[in-house]
Image: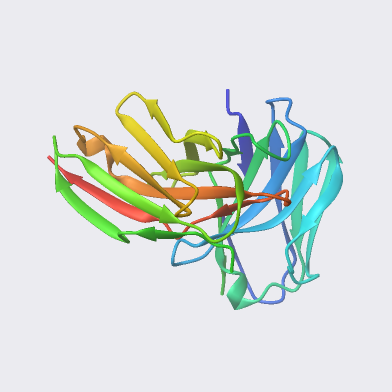
Amino acid sequence: DTAVSQTPKYLVTQMGNDKSIKCEQNLGHDTMYWYKQDSKKFLKIMFSYNNKELIINETVPNRFSPKSPDKAHLNLHINSLELGDSAVYFCASSPALQNTEAFFGQGTRLTVV
Amino acid sequence: SQQGEEDPQALSIQEGENATMNCSYKTSINNLQWYRQNSGRGLVHLILIRSNEREKHSGRLRVTLDTSKKSSSLLITASRAADTASYFCATDFYGTDKLIFGTGTRLQVFP
């Protein structure tokens, strides 16, 4: 059983398009995150949600809009995609906001052409 | 930036040797964690060490934490080719609700 699953695994799209990445966790965790990993492998937090409430929005362009329909899901919608959005996006979850390990999905490699 | 710095950026060793990676950070932490990332995969949690702990072991992994120097090290003993991966430290900063990842160390273990 996959603990944190995200789809799709690969996404190739043209500039200007709108796309979504879905994430689901079956661990019963309260907290979910989106991270962006760039070509240099730097991993940067984008958003965190706790019990469906937005906790952190790390100066991410408002073209990125997370949506948490319930505690087990955190989807990421991106409008008007730009070349610089190309990266690997990771969803993660943890039992609580602090002092706990995070469980990561396999990543979605987004390529904007 | 709160991001941790890791060194070395890359490390190549032979199977059986020990590998040591270091992480430095800038502000007070609740805990520090180490993660492994195999190529093309997600991150896997290895060890969490709390700010009041100095050393922790898990199998062939040994983590130390020196809060006075704001640094941590990860030692992998008797390395194997399967240990080839990128290793990241992540800090849970005091007063925040976010896990900040370091720049990572790419470890290559040759058989």
